[in-house]
Length: 362
Image (cartoon, rainbow, N blue to C red):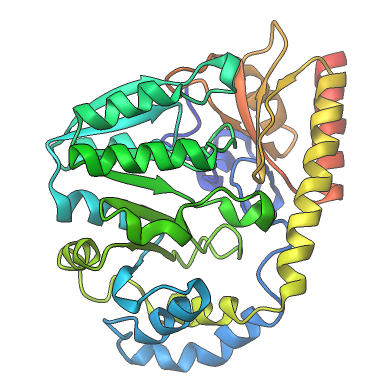
């Protein structure tokens, strides 16, 4: 039976009920959150702001919009603040009403789930193992031609790889040519060093059908608050906002967003350096243990276990030892031996490797 009963990692309540480990005792590799935790001082700022919960949050998200506008160098009218990146995906579907949605698998399950919930027909294409589970650009271009809206992960979850800038331009140009909205999910792009990030943000004005979606919950380690945003053409942004429930983003999340954008640059740099160092270490040690990994650039790794291990048997064996991993057996295009591991700090990674080796050698 799948542990991911809600389709995602990080479900500590289900894991605790199944394996008998208290919720606060898990070493959780199933959710891809910044191992450094929130920026210094954020929790104190939230505690100080608690008396304000007696007032409604700003329905226009004006403080965060203004700060993001300056941070990203885009017009305020191009921004949509959401209750996590997932709400922005939902708003794109609700506001643009596509009849047919294209999804590039394997990918974040909400692309397909939300599309089906809102009545769209979903058309799938698949990445290939030879391309680290990226899809050939001509296949993506055909998908865009045949649909009204297409989702693309950049870097993609669960494999963590990026498309090149030329490939992204090709996809965006196809969107303009065929009148298809191209939604590029950049939820994990902040974990990639800036010179290596492949994003069309500086060229966004050239592509009115392009929507970029980003998350603040993962890089800034505030998933419990839910905060994300979309950047797109002002008319598209307004169509999305028109479908948004008033006050869907709470006041503490808005405060956290503004605080995080003011975080010292050393926090971002330390995060990126830690993730790269620990990701490289994990890849090397996992290879030594007979696992296969792919060259992901984000704060997680797609891992194929050696036979006879399956995602389910390894998840159970590790779960009984207080370590939680994400099964990828249910991802279309992957296999029953595939798992995803978050990149965490040195003590957590050492524990994971120690338990993995004990299980596999035992």
